[in-house]
Image (cartoon, rainbow over the protein chains, first blue to last red):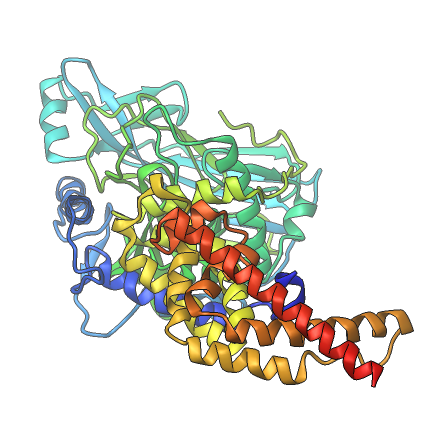
Length: 393
Length: 211
């Protein structure tokens, strides 16, 4: 009786929802391992573990680069950290990028992606296991309409042991100059690279895209991709529905820790940044990431192609974290990496599959796994809709 | 292994809405927020609108904006103290919100007294039956609001958690940290008071009509 009689209130306004979220986010930020204050005034063992996670990540990431690129201050392979006194937040960088990206063309005859993909791959023998950092240049022109001709150009770049420890194991294993993989990222990777670029042309399905939620990406037709919502609220609702469905079907257990729905949503939004979608969808995805309290600004950096940008990081699904580099000034996505983390319950998989952009890759075998290590990166040289015919200009 | 050519149709099952599913998700997120504070945002997302609705019915929308936010701030700061064995995340949040509402019990009583004077606005135009039933409901609301304003604060908390939040007596006792028996006696006392007040309001209305 009471619930029927008392005046039903207006639903909570978006402004009040946002204000409450902001108040909570301030406490969360203060409580985060890199925050100075702690809201609860209690420091349990769990928070100490979390602190170690970030610190370990930074140290380990630096170690990778020390071996690969000879630069101990980098964030992920080939990235140089710069010093900056500017006060920047992940949120402001992402919101600026969201505003900027809407100026990109919203359609075209082709969706073009010109990437350098780096991948940490297990190699060596049982006695001398080590990881190599394999690098591949991949350009792809996907015809917008189904039935059009997709053109791809793939070239393997110089590869080598990923870390100093890997280098030692590699020497002990006889120092091979090339590695051939037959699954996942199949091909031969060599210290000298592979001079021949492979060109392929296939009849395509149009600019299909996928939404990556957890380990079950949803495949969308080109028409469906074109209809993806271009507002933050609608895109978030779609991703949350997918995330909740996935979480309901994959309850935690058997030593498996599942991400929160919010984490899965943010990871899904992140995945869209490299998909053939309208700039409005990218902008909505960037806003979703910007609203996530877990995203943090790491440093001002120079990416492997020498472009200035801002590195941002947030915890992704399954103990991985994600690092984005957003171009300084341009607001464009310069690179996107998956880093291994040490979130509770996550153990290195013996054989994992991950998917970035339009390529999927074998995971690695984990003998030399360590937190903060880049599992894979996509360095974006060019991405967007174009009417220019395929060809390396 | 992913086949990017397969499965073009996007299959989106309905979002799980059951309270059990929501609370399971909330409990998992709350546990994770011990080491990953950002996970607490899921708890906010799941329950802030409901808590806001509960507070808005007791204190009005403006106060609800602040108290709903404060509820989640308090919950976040006390998240290490939450014990899943003692009750759901939802009832725990209701308990915190109720505690914050009780700090403003004078505002609440003022609101009920105002409602008792004017009631809710009936529809200006519409089907005659609908208007009649709304007028009747407004009369009942005035009576109810008068009774609520007179209830002892502690009894009102129990009544509102049951009536608006749908909490069981066990959940109420955990949320308010009172013995089960106390929760039960407060509830029955509150219900009796409401019934008594409603009966006397009906009697005086009838007497007024008879005159």
